Amino acid sequence: MDAILKPVTTRDDTAAATRPRPSREEVEAAVRTLLAWTGDDPEREGLLDTPKRVAKAYEEIFSGYFQDPAEHLKRTFEDVGGYDDIVLVRGIPFFSHCEHHMLPFVGEAHVAYYPSEGVVGLSKIARVIDIFAKRLQTQENLTAQVVDAIDTHLAPRGIAVMIEAEHQCMTMRGVQKQGVTTITTQFTGVFRDDPSEQVRFMSLVRGGRRD
Image 1: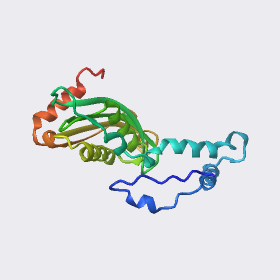
Image 2 (image 1 turned 30 degrees about the vertical axis):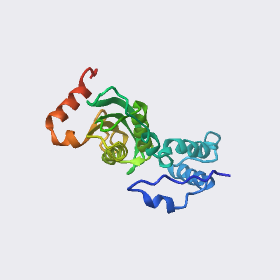
Image 3 (image 1 turned 120 degrees about the vertical axis):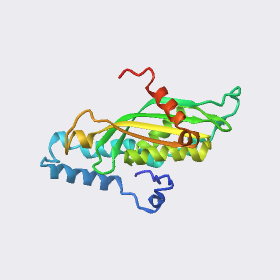
Image 4 (image 1 turned 120 degrees about the horizontal axis):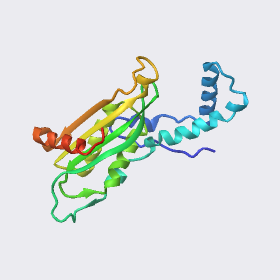
């Protein structure tokens, strides 16, 4: 019997809690239908267990719907020896899936903030990226959600987020252009108000990279 899991609600998916979640059997049946639609035989030996494997893989790939970023941002540390300058976590690898084609996009996220009353554990920033990335996404929405979560729970003096990713919906289908990178940025507080802070952020992100 499947465990009863309810999606964690956020500002833009509060309707998720009221939607019934299909059973594992329904998911596996849907995968068998897709296999048949592609032109293959769901009953051949190599595909017999594919519906179960896909369902299990999707539980992991889209586990962000059942995780709350607030759980990772609620604990802060105020004893930082008077440090009040920029905190940057650079080069956080992630993968997500385009909500338009359900194909992967893969890249790196760079997150910086100016602490207000405390700092959060560095690994927690990476966990927040993963939580939002493990949902059906657009890169623009992913960028905004990360900013919103950090702003809501840390209330820093400013946030800068930059995400760089390659989208398989451009490389595997459609225009089929390999190596094209999409960059999105969002700034709040001192980063938004002071262009020199944006330059500093970009310089720190690019500094020392092996491009």
